Image (cartoon, rainbow, N blue to C red):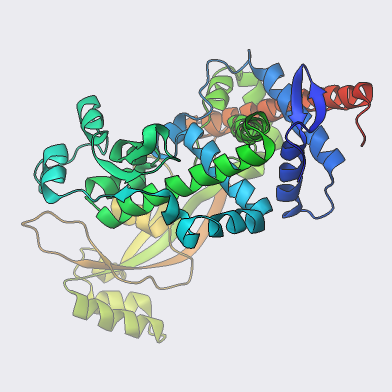
Length: 418
């Protein structure tokens, strides 16, 4: 192990500790075994410079707003990552230190353990059948939860881990479990927290608090950069909404939209119209019978004349040409979604409580494609967001390049071995 004072590089008067460089390199090597410490050092410095360069530009955007709503608080996520990273690299040494404890386990660091009683839960959350509008403890409930001690240990802040401590470390699923009064979950989370505290304190004894703090900061920086890239539309979940891209989209001009449309017209391809027939029957049994007959090769129009209860039965259930424009009814919308030449399964109509149910079977005979009109709201929305994302990606890529050059320059000037 490196001595406590080992520093790989001093960057902007902020040291990069050897512990940080070693752990971050080992973690990256799990994805790419060819990455060495030199490349990792450059990457970490690049991330530092990138956050510095973008601080003023994104100050109005909360990088972790989504995490705070439903995920883990960023500080909790960093603590979890820190403990996981240390375990990943120093698992053998940590396990050896645990075996040296009284009883050969973490239990040797616990002087008392307690569960919440039914009365405790009742006092904290109210009746078990109470309607819950939001899975969030009020300030008064948090203060009360802080009185419920789950574990007593010298590892814990103030010597105890309380229900409030456990609650503070949960995402939305964890909070739901607490509101469901899941005693097993609460106990498990208390021990998990204690285990993380042990790993962190073990590392502080081995490498020094400053080195461990630097590693935590490196992990936090990495998280911030990933969130920053997502804000610019890179690596984001397909359903995520970036406030930066929404802001840039509002600044896109009609001329830019027109140009994008003409260069990417294929993106706006859509069904222009279809020709279809349908068979309406009064119950599931008849629907299954008709479906089997239609899929066995019997003529669809003939089956419609025989079984359909719709007014157009005599015309073989002909729906004619359905144009993809205006407000389509539910049957036309359903027909638009069917593959040509394939008899659909029966669909139960959405009818009122006092209306008789019926079923529809569809067959699309022809489908023709066209394009969204250039001046449509769909084109404006999709094109403006695509243009905004292009601009956002270009902006962040330029900043990444500047940050990388700054990192390389600092490494050269410092004389760090690479």
